Image (cartoon, rainbow, N blue to C red):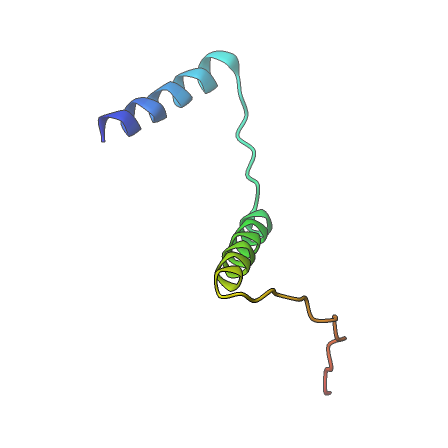
Length: 65
């Protein structure tokens, strides 16, 4: 807990001293990182069972109005 508090304090101090601006990466970047992490885990697990994953061809969305 002390290490985390120190890390936050150092980041806060450096942002005030050097004028660093916070840049929010947004939810889309988080979702992309999460998706790639899940796909990587699935590929690794499939490989341990002797399988390989293949990506399905993209099908256009069928919207009914």
